[in-house]
Amino acid sequence: MEATHKDWILFNGRIVNTKEEQPMIPLEERGFQFGDGIYEVFRLYDGKPHLLDLHLERFFHSMEEIKLIPPFTKEELAEELHQMIEKNQFQEDGNVYLQISRGAQARNHVYESNMQPTYFANIVSFPRPIATMEQGIKVTVEEDIRWKFCHIKSLNLLP
Image 1 (tube, rainbow, N blue to C red):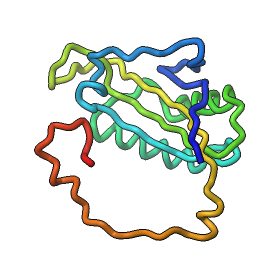
Image 2 (cartoon, rainbow, N blue to C red):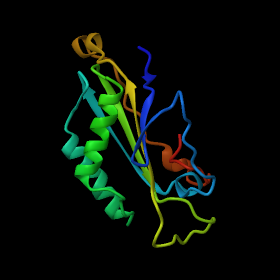
Image 3 (cartoon, rainbow, N blue to C red):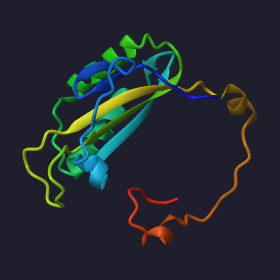
């Protein structure tokens, strides 16, 4: 089962064909420099968003928690996401990855109050694993060792 990205993405309010244009994110983007942003992933079943309202509610709550002011309303973002799905003519199962970061400024831990956020979303085709769903899988329980790596100044919690 191979996941494949679709050509049309949402980038800062525009639906962009990545075969024709590669959107650029500045090196001083705080999402790149500090991981200063939020993401959300939601499923598409037969091309239709699953529980989109709840995912957007969590997305907006997360932005509020880090005091990131969105450049859109929930309704505007939902409409942009629907346009992206429609532009891709996506009728399959997949995931939408949505990310927003605070924006670009000269590297400084203190951010400016009037920053313009950067946001994007893309679709990845990801079929339901029907056989796995029917047969189940074997799992093991492992200790969470990620905090053993907190001495590493990683962009993410490792491993």
